Image 1 (cartoon, helix red, strand yellow):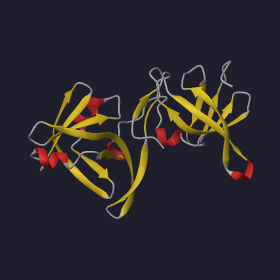
Image 2 (cartoon, one colour):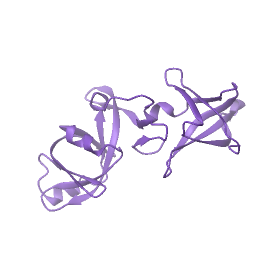
Image 3 (tube, helix red, strand yellow):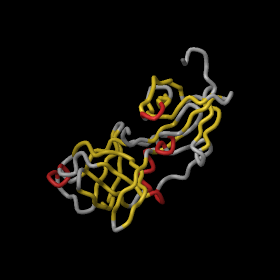
Image 4 (spheres, rainbow, N blue to C red):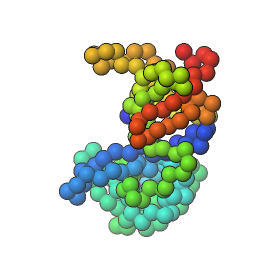
Length: 200
């Protein structure tokens, strides 16, 4: 499954990839919002590549959960600012470049309760994976096994399983545009699409 990100599709669907983490004695659903890629300056600031279109959401956060390999911890945010396409964060207790360097490659996550509310036609990426895809004529096309980012819109990779083997046959690529994606039924894990000419 691909890394963390928030996507805004051509038909106005924006969503996070989420996962569940066992932390503090219980399983919690977290949303990945960025990755620390380097230090910034000498006072402990870090550079973050955001995985959300709405980078201003970082100013609403008081703390984030960070994870890398087997290390998981909660960090309190002291300051947020922006540089080009990066989010610059200063964490409480991270006061020099050496301490900031140790956070390189850590993934930033927030609890589900901290996520921005979903709007109309918005979905979490994690809810779309392995969703059944059917045409408006009722033909079963398979399941979404991957989501590809492009410059204009996302593309859903849909594959049909081959009987009892569980293997997937050749895939159909469906652009995430309103002309193709007619309905997304998250509770029932079904997406209804209209296959445009040339998609298979």
